[in-house]
Image (cartoon, rainbow, N blue to C red; front, top):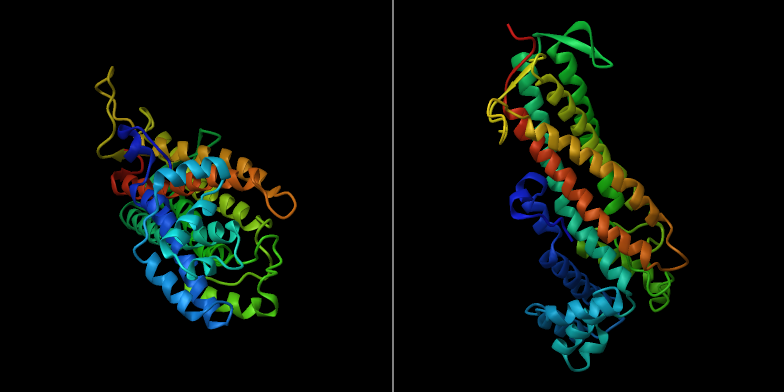
Amino acid sequence: MALTFLPYHARLLGDAEIADILGEKADLAAMLAFEVALARVEASHGLIDAKDAAAIGTSLGQFAPDMARLTQATLRDGVPVPDLVAQMREAIGGNAASALHFGATTQDVIDTALALKLKPVFAMLQRRFELVDSCLADLIERFGDRPLMARSRMQAAIVIDVGDRLLVWRKAVVQLAAALPAMADRLLILSLAGAAGTAEKFGDRIDPVRASLATELGLAVPSYVPHTDRDRIADFASFLSRITGALGKMGMDIALMAQNGVDQIELSGGGGSSAMPHKRNPVLAEVLVTLARYNAIQVACLHQALVHEQERSGSAWTLEWLILPQMIEAATTALSHAAALLASVERIGEAG
């Protein structure tokens, strides 16, 4: 699920590219990919018949669920997988239908689908970090040696170079980009642990099955059962808030620099006012601050999802679905806006 906005807010507060990555089609494709790969791997390890696995792959290659039925069933079940599996079995038919989803549980499907969807998210974050860093490097090259009055507690302090302030912004971005691969390693993992986390239907073959399935899907095998251990999700939420926080600091600085009477920055394309036509509001800078505050609030809420009771949670797990996509979209939107804002800078430093 991605953020839903009124049409005129969609580009200001949303990110169409990430909405596609996290949206309905991508979610269904990831769940289908899990089921097809699971059947193929299970056949290779002698858990289901190879003909059944082939039938599953062929049938699901053209499968499209009844979305009205799936929506109603999700309202009843709290999750889409039971009815999705039922619809897939109807499409497969015959003996192969019963081989589908062998040994897996709903959480295996949904959590692994999340990992598959996060692959392009991490790639996007990397690209956008690089773009913001490039914009900052360009500004340092153009304006870095110009004088700038530093502000301490929003009062004039001493004269510094523009580069001194920009390097603070840049270091924050570089540090976050450097932490991205380790964060991806924690999130891009397979879930295959069965009904209560014990993988009871696989017996002593669970380790090779997990290894093969992870390889098939391009994921890693965790050293723990991830069903109720949600530490990685909480840390990812914190990471996303750090992204928007770093960019929000940048936005706040730019908004303050653009104030009348301060005049430490000139931006092209500032926003207009319905009542004061002389104004050129630093809109993107303000939105960066908004997105930073939004994600900071959501971190506390998502940390509530650490309380996953016993072997499966309904409420805590659902909380993740409600919050995490919005936090991801806020972070990617902030990176996009930050690059556009930095590209709009015509001058930084004291007006000459």
